[in-house]
Length: 487
Image (cartoon, rainbow, N blue to C red; front, side):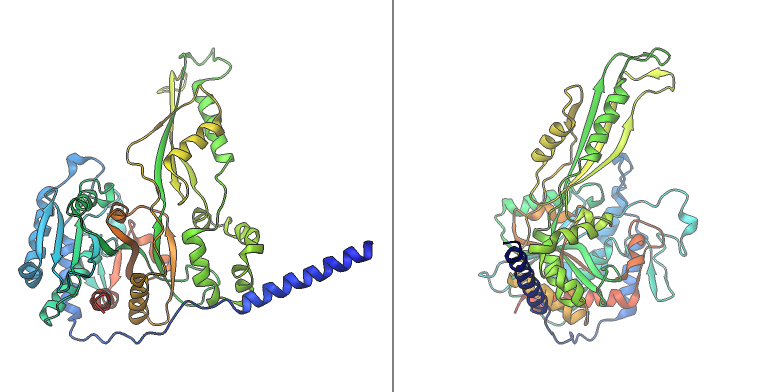
């Protein structure tokens, strides 16, 4: 009997190994060949100078609304009018919340669903004391060493200016789109987009606009970011995580620290936060993360294909490896990040009230309500009060990778960045695009930036810059995308 069991087990193991090998060998590539876009007549120097002018305007979003510099944002509007005369003669432009912009380029075929291209005018401030660390001043817009330097060159005036350059170019050539094209540029994305993108999206919804797809910032063409991939990865965000900050508070008696109770409010609170950190959300390979592995897996070594092509069996192996990287782990679960703690104002004074804020980034499939319930259950202490702070949102829906619009985007990337491997992925942060899911069949997040892994720290950091050659690629990408969308 024992020999029969061992023989059966060995036979089963052989079968499983065979299945895994076959699945790895048959892991089909989702890439395709597209002829490079042949676009001539884009004046590289001219468009670089236009972006430089845009960088010089300090359209900064501050956490303190009192610091908002409205006149500078209006000056940016005037710059766009002067820089893109054909756009402002042909397209319908309107302001939303005074500083946001919505353009409509009327299509020739009313039966086709419109598309929407997004960007935002505002940028983040420069961290005080770091100005001296910049090679060129952060708002100089300097064109030097083959780069355009300054805040907004990567995030994300490059989208605003690049899109408008593309439309101006197409208008000059006599091009007329079949589908209506909307351009929307919010003014407060860096501080939540509540008065910019949210209100523009609400306006489109009020007008019963139904979009074929929306394209916003998100992934880019990045070299060296994906272990095991020898080619640049062009990452298209097909979903983004939700956002929720919870305030945890404990109240009790104060007094002198020389006569403490058995547990202070600070101690109770810290124990609660420790429970949250210890009991992390479960990992799940599904949705955008699963799609990413399906697109990247066939382009990797056989060992990687063996794992990624057999997640039905080897998902535990993959998870154990991905959990070693905070970035990869964040793509598989709702994250828990204690960020703020407050207790007494003096070292020898017992705090009457202690508070903490924990920021959660929600994986699609979780909701703000489910996260709150889980936090309550995990802490299991009625002394700890939980309050959701404003500004939270559920995760976005996951957009379709089998749609015609995704194929159009993938084709345009292959044409603009030959050799890049296109893949869906999950956006870990928040973008303006989250407000448009109610009016758009699919929302994608991709910026045609060509970067190395180490360049990512330049976004919101020191020495933000874009190469002049890459900016030309940005403009040509949007020209080609608009053309491809009309096919």
